[in-house]
Image (tube, rainbow, N blue to C red; front, side, top):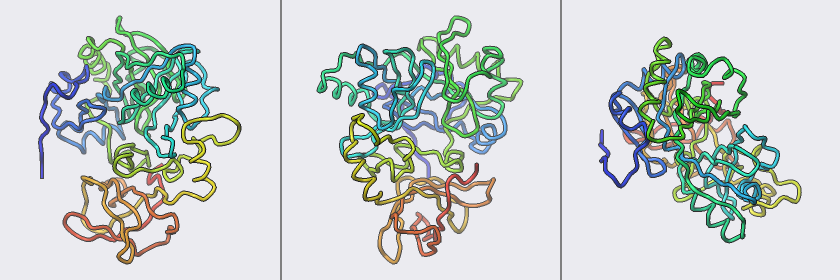
Length: 372
């Protein structure tokens, strides 16, 4: 079954939109109120480029929330469940953001550009509005806005060779989540060693939307020797790698989850006197233990495609969790999925089931990631 998505002015386009259309984009989703390419007509080839070569992605929908001013550090530290005070200038940090009930509402990467200037590189929810409201209520002296910044990702094992061709050998000195403000033929950028895959790569944070097509073509030419091609954040690779997707694996409005359920314990700092939104609720959750846990699943039967919505996981006629995303892995030769199940259910459970659109299916609990 296939559907189309209407292209209109009510949903924003990234600076790379026209370039992706010219390169044959076949499908979009909507992310942060923007069109996000989903695939270019050959998902198998796009997966192969990501895992074995190099791929370029329009991820302009990965918006930035800029927080700057005298109290910028205080506000960012209050927003985030993870202590950010030690984040050095020129480095990023993965920072879960929760509401007052301890429910995850976003999981951005924080980039520290200066002592009093930060970007939150956000997943799919309105963190600019949340941050602005919290700042006003708390009386923080800050300015908050969405800057003219649109990432373009270069991902895969050959990504370093492409990015070196563009910027020079210094790119190899960047550690993971490190970044540098730079330019490319006068195009203003922030270059970060990061990206939503486990295959390695970089993100080029374009700082002038009028030059999106120019940057896309510049990257395309530099990657020609490495057989670069267009792609998009890849669901199969992210399931194999165990990457969390806020919006797919959980969402406040659909299936709210706390960081402990999602396996983000290492990114929640409950010790000490530092206060942050949701701290008391998270302390209570930590004390009693999370109600669910995020796991992988193996699915029996013929190859499956992605889930259109979360599917109930059943045990003896009772709902005990949700299957949130699934795919057929050619590398593993198996159907795999991710989801949340009752914490009391052990890894050896063999009586879990889910109803797929065409058949009932037995589930086997699997450890994440599927492929390291």
